[in-house]
Amino acid sequence: MDILFQFLQSGAWGNLSWGNLAMLSVGCVFLWLAINKDYEPLLLVPIGFGILIGNIPFKVGMNIGVYESGSVLSILYQGVSQGYYPPLIFLGIGAMTDFSSMLSNPKLILLGAAAQAGIFVTFLGSLYLGFSITDAAAIGIIGGADGPTAIFLSSKLAPNYLGAIAIAAYSYMALVPVIQPPIIKLLTSHKERLIRMQPSQPVSKRLRILFPVVAFLITAFIAPGSITLLGMLFFGNLLKESGVTERLAKTARTAFIDIVTILLGLTVGTSTDAHRFLTPDALKIFALGAASFCVATAAGVLFAKAMNLFLKEKINPIIGAAGVSAVPDSARVCQMVGAKEDPQNFLIMHAMAPNVAGVIGSAVAAGILLATLGH
Image 1 (tube, rainbow, N blue to C red):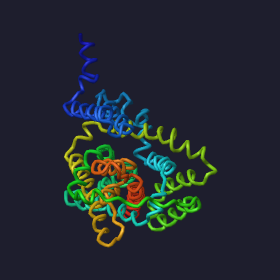
Image 2: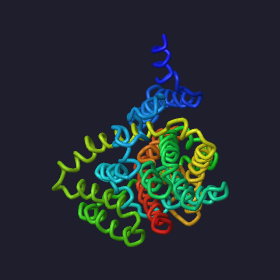
Image 3: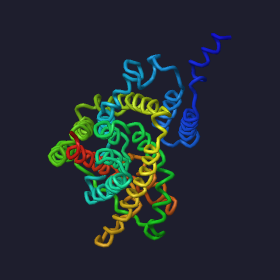
Image 4: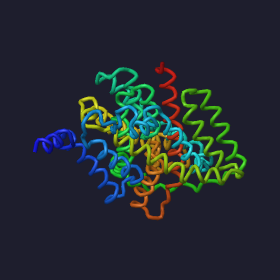
C-alpha cells in the first residue's frame, strides 16, 4: 500500500491542480470547436490536443515536459521559442498565395494597411495596463491576426509571454467566423453590403513573376526586421509563379507546410502548462487580443467606407474586414456575409486583395517593432 500511495503521489493524480483541470477543459473545447464546428481544424486540433498533453501533471525531473531541457517536447518546442517555425509557415503561405487580385486592384492594399490599426491600438493598450514596451509590442501584433508573425516577434521581444500570445493569436484566427460578421453588420448598411464590384482584370505572368522580387526589395529596405518572414513569403510565391519550380512549390504548399503546422500547433499547445499559463498577465493578453481583433476588423471596414467618399467605382465595405491577416478565413467570411445579402454577389476574390496585403502589412509592422525595440 505504501508503494501504491507513493506511486499515486508522484504521478498525475498526486500533482493535479484545479488549473490543470481548467486547461484540460480548454483543450477539449478547442477540439470540439474544430471537429463539431469546423473552426480552423488544421490549427485547433493540434493546439487542443497539445493543451491536453501539456496539462497532464508529472513529477519534476522525469525529463518529459516541454520546459525540461533535453526532453523530446522541449527540442520540438525550440522551433517556437527560437522562431524557426514561423518563417517556414510563411514559405508555404507564399507558395499557395495568388497575389493577382491585389495586383489587379492596387488601391485595395490600403485596406490591408488600415486593418493594422489593431496592432498599434493594442500596443498602446498594453502599455496602459503596465506591460513593458517590448512586451507591449509583441502583444500588439495579435491585432494583425497573424499567428506565425505573433510567435516570431514574441520569441524575440517577449519570450516570457510567448505561450499566451501564441494561443491568443491562433484562437482569434480560428474564431474569425464568430467575431467578424457582427462587426461588419454593425458598421455597414444593407445598401452598402449589396454593392457589386467590377470583376478583377487579368494580370500578366511577367508581373506575377516580378512582384515577389520587387515587393521583397521594397519591404526589406523599409523594414529590415521583416526580412526573415517576408523573404520566405516572397520566395515561396516566386517558386509558384516562376513556372520552373512547380515541384518545389507543390511541396512547400502541401506536405512541408502541413508538417510545420502540426509541429507548431502541438508544441504551442503543450506550452500552456497551467502553472505558467493561468496568470493575471495572460488573462490581460487574451482580453487585449480580443479587443485588437475587433479594432482591426472595424478599421478595415471603416476605411473602405471612407474610400467610397472619393471613388466613382464603390468598394463593398465588407471586404475591409479581410484586411486582417487570417488568410484565407477572413476572405471567406466576407464572401459569406455578402452572400447572405445577395447570393449572386461574389466577393471572395476581391477580399483576397486586402487579405494578402494584411499578411505583408503585419510582417512589416513586426519588422519595424523588432528593428526599433530589439536588442
